Image (cartoon, rainbow, N blue to C red):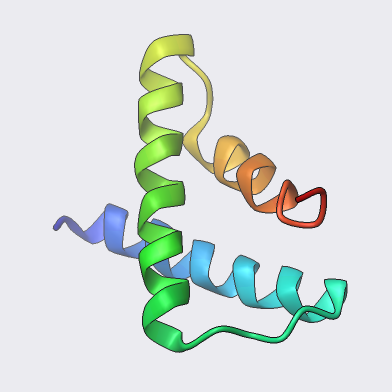
Length: 69
């Protein structure tokens, strides 16, 4: 995995932890959060490729949807 993708995953992990804490949802295990962050980043890249959007903005939107679920 490349440097930038690793950085995106680390950012997604931090955002997910923050979102869980703000929503009052108990934090899952670290490995679960990392897997979910990887999926969020993969989805963001796929969406960006289809729509030509900014990957970081898409990651932010995908993480924001946690509270809605």
